[in-house]
Image 1 (cartoon, rainbow, N blue to C red):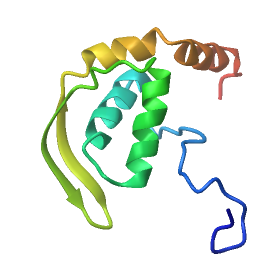
Image 2 (image 1 turned 180 degrees about the horizontal axis):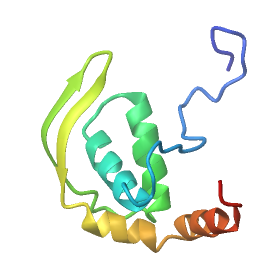
Image 3 (image 1 turned 90 degrees about the vertical axis):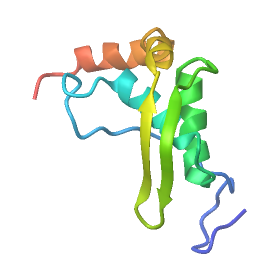
Length: 112
């Protein structure tokens, strides 16, 4: 399929990479991914579905994504939500091969 710019696409959004603008000490990546998965699980947006699918793969497909309260989609801005109960998903991410590979790569990188 070609998009409006003539670029070949699969026609389905997916996550290609993750960039976090905070230190791992400030926001541990497993906690962040678990919270994002829970928050986006209530959204109907195609990009939200791609995020939920990506984190689900990293977390080993665990069903316990956490609890969501006060969900509201804010057009043009994203969403606003309270997330809790993500400990099981966070633990699954910490134990995943993908996260171990990420940690090993980070350790191998020279300090900035």
